[in-house]
Amino acid sequence: MTAVLIERAQTDTLATVRLNRPDKRNALTLGMWRDLEQAFKLLEREDALRCVVVRGTGANFAAGADLSEFPALRATADQAEAYGKQMIAALSAIRDCRHPTIAAIEGLCVGGGLEIALMCDLRLGTADSRFGIPIQKVGVAMPFPELAILTQMLGRPTMLALLLEGQLHDAAWAERHGLLSRIATDLEGDLSATVGRILTGSPVSHHHHKYFTRRAFDVLQALDAADVQRSYEAVETADYREGIAAFLDRRTPKFPGN
Image 1 (tube, rainbow, N blue to C red):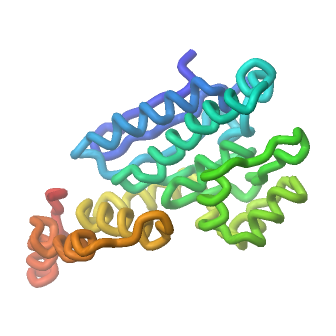
Image 2 (image 1 turned 180 degrees about the vertical axis):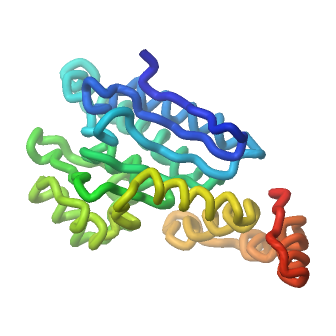
């Protein structure tokens, strides 16, 4: 059984990346981290694509790492580093994907599963979903740059609450602390409406905002003059011309995506 699936909608504008180990609550293996990286590298190259949904098969998003692998694959510091680099490669591929991404969360969203969800642009969760990073229970420490990326995103107090106490939190706590964009009363309906809003928007606009909101928090590489200039280039695109024309004509725009 393929543990990471790419599912296509009827049109080529929407794809779903599905974590597919329902018998293990979609617990993540090293192979799944590799497959996730490759899946998002593939989707990154698809010009017609406009939105990616990430979700789990069955009743859970992902229950964290498959700890049964750790004695063989994370027994030494060198092994842990190699495992961690693969995780970061996958997480970065999700975060840096130029297409808008949505995590649709049910059940457990824990550890590495929560990290995957946090790399998505929007996170919708059911009221009974659960969130946490209980790695203190097995003596694992979150390495850099994982820790830096998540701390930057959630803030140090929230990260320490997750890491030091190791609790599973409900959806209300997750929404309050920025882990969830919102709680969905009807996940499929809310997901469909969210996808619809994204698909009607300009891909140029989406790509621009994804890139520059990420760069705004990039402490390792300051914006240079070329980046500042690039931030104004959207006005030279077909999407911009269509958006203005549609507004003036009082019609719905049909963005070409370039």
